[in-house]
Length: 242
Ligand SMILES: [Zn+2]
Image 1 (cartoon, rainbow, N blue to C red):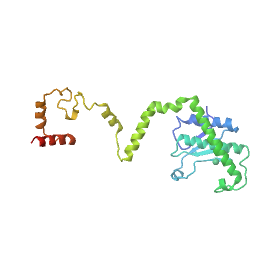
Image 2 (image 1 turned 90 degrees about the vertical axis):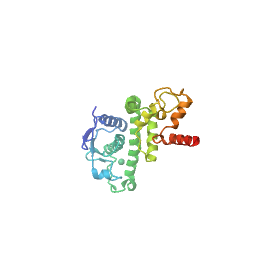
Image 3 (image 1 turned 120 degrees about the horizontal axis):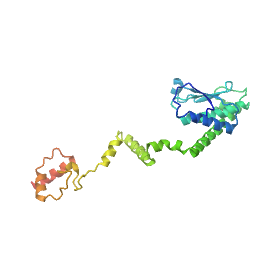
């Protein structure tokens, strides 16, 4: 169902999101009672985007159009702007924007009448957006859950977030998939109590070896290629027996 006349001038991909714009537009019309759906211009403006306090959206009372700047913005944020401007559209249809007073910089503070219009737009626009969003999640829980179901469980997601926060705190870059592989691998394949990196026969049970043999083997072992901890153990042992 196409409710708004959308002019996609920013060229963003709307294949997954266009329905949301029309759905919110229709919902807002039922709530605010405006008559004619406005044109919606979606714009990109590099200069405006580089300004942290650049324009996000405006309503043109003469052209009866809503213009939204979309650069670097989340769809949800753009839709919240749309709800806000649809309140101004309603005010315009009701003749409430025909104010001859001050329209310059700081009008929201200096022009009492426009301040009221702005208050109404923030309050009603945001609540309209919130109610529309919650209603959608109720009636179509898949929209809300799709991302999570397709990707990972909440627990997995939490763990990942935590790990990434920790590793970035310590300035480490970790490949989490490698970590997972390590975890799945048994450190002691044959379960003889000797970790594989130190086990003569990693695949076999060799703990029954006679003490004599193992003493001899271990004492004559070249420790230079061993992990530090193990090497220390061997060196200390050899020193003692000297
Ligand atoms: Zn406003």
